[in-house]
Image 1: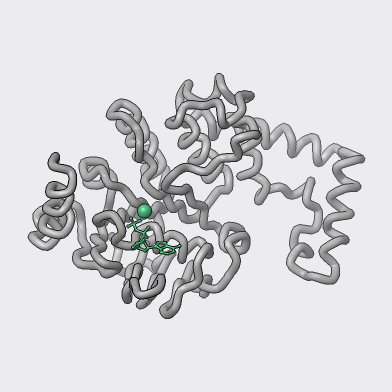
Image 2: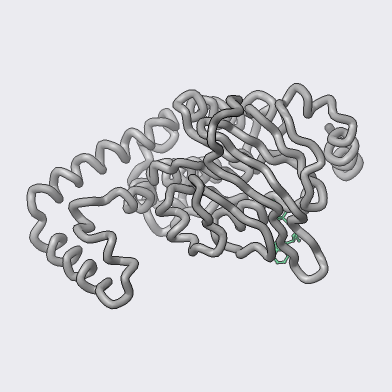
Length: 286
Ligand code: ADP
Ligand code: MG
C-alpha cells in the first residue's frame, strides 16, 4: 500500500439506522486504487448495508462517501453506476428471462456511444426526449458506426464470458433462470465487469458455492486483482479473504473493530472472539 496515493473511495463517519438498530455506526475507511479490501464480520454486522450505502440504494443518516474526490452519498444508484461503481448482490441478481449474453450486454449499455448519440442529455429533464429520439432514429437507420459498435460489443461480451472458462461461453444463449446457481452468479459478475467499473463491489460472491466452485471463483478474482481492478469484497470464507486481500476490515455491530493486512487480522484477539468465536458457537463447526 502506497501512503501517498489518493484513495479512490473514502467512507467517513458513516451512520445508518433501521428503527433502533445502528446497522452502520460511525464507519470510516479508504480504498486505494488497485487495492482489494475485504469486509468481514458476523451476520448482521452491517456489511451489506455498507454496500447499499455506497451504491446508492440507501442514503446515510450521517457521514460522507467520496468516490474519486466527489461526494456520492445522496446520488441515485444509476448515477453512481455511471460514475464507475458496479456491484453484485449477496443473493445474486440477474435478469432471469434474459439470456446470459443479454445480461452482459445490459452491463455494457453504459459504454454505448454510437447507439446512444447524446447520453449527456439524459440528465436534463426538459431535453431528455431529444436523446431518446436520437437513439430511436439511430436504431432504425443502423449506420455504419452502430454496426461497428455492435461488432465491438459482441467481441467484448465474449471476452467477459471467457473469463469464466467454459462455464458461460457455451451457455450464452441460455436463459439466466435455467442456469445453475454458480453460473447465475458468474453471469452477475460478468455483467458487473462489462460496465468497466473503476470500483467493483462483490457481496459474498461465493455464497452457496461448493469448494470446487469457490476455488474457481477465487482464481477468477485473483486474476481480476492481477489485472489491477479495485475491489471491495464481502466474504465469509476466511481462507479466500486471506489469500485475496491487501487489507481486511472487521465489522462488528456496524463498527470497525480491526483493520489491517490479512496476516495481522487473523491473529487479532478481538477478531477471533467477535467473528470466529461467535461463528463457531453458532454453527458448531469451523
Ligand atoms: P450483514 O450483511 O453484515 O449480514 P446487514 O447489513 O444485512 O448485515 O444488516 C445489518 C443490520 O441491519 C441487521 O440487523 C439487519 O437486520 C438490519 N437491516 C439491514 N437492512 C435492513 C433494512 N432494509 N430494513 C431494516 N433493517 C435492515
Ligand atoms: Mg450481508
